[in-house]
Image 1 (cartoon, one colour):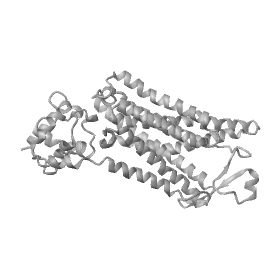
Image 2 (cartoon, one colour; image 1 turned 90 degrees about the horizontal axis):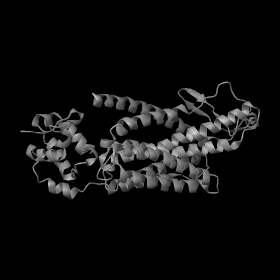
Image 3 (tube, rainbow, N blue to C red; image 1 turned 90 degrees about the vertical axis):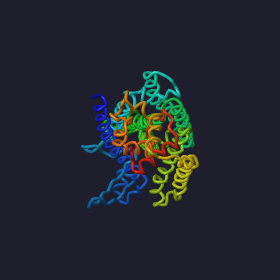
Image 4 (tube, helix red, strand yellow; image 1 turned 180 degrees about the horizontal axis):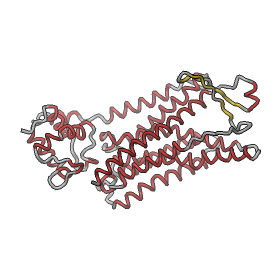
Length: 399
């Protein structure tokens, strides 16, 4: 019953998390586009009011004309929309999902005893510390170097180094699948903390100054913009880390930490292309195609690097892919969790009838997605996965 309820909680939280993440990322991407596409106001009245940029757009059968006041408008409107619940809801739902999926059964999903044989409680504590420590160090880097000359480049280099170190530690301390998720959650926590500790408080101070009839300090807008830009570069790496748990060939690789770093770097480079693309159309910067090219090149190189060893699979092709051969693989690699004593997810694979019943799932999980055995705890080989694939494609016969 517990497993059934956890599955429902996982489904509903995942659904909620995706919805709120779409709302947050969508609004973030829109405002990055908006800032990059603004042109000086054509109307002198708008310029006199302090408008620093405007945009004309058409969408859904209507025309829109947003304008931007770099510091503050001359007068606050009666209704001011705030963008923060999208960020908070995304983090809260994501943390709840991480708790249900990994922390609740940390001994199974978080701990890989071949890496570190620690207790479930210790693993949970260290995993949570990743989120806290990364934010503290990242925030310290921004505070120390963010306002210096060439500060953005320094911050970018140090944060990239910090992510590399965190990825290495996570992949050497936790099960690969959980490690990838943890790094994504770590960065996503920093994104939400940027909103909670810097962006929204700064905006509240500006609003308070306007209401008091005082000139607002422009530093709050500058800091908020800086952290918002950081968030947009974090977005694609985080999304990749969150999706990676469906693809075992990524997190089961011996150098999985490097796989994670390379793919997140590629995502950030591709995001840079889209950020600069709007400015290029207005003649503000060079064509950003090199950033996209670098991102795609890194992905292609990683794809080639992770390609399976076809020679080992070819040698195994001579082995008959009949049920007796399959049964030997299942006995060695699968019976621990899906045998007579234990049937995780109510799946049993130690009888011909049960194997036939779950043939599609066995093929999908072990050959296509490569997510089973969980964390590859039983060390199934590529040749054995290929044997399962040939057995299934040959009709999944058990007689």
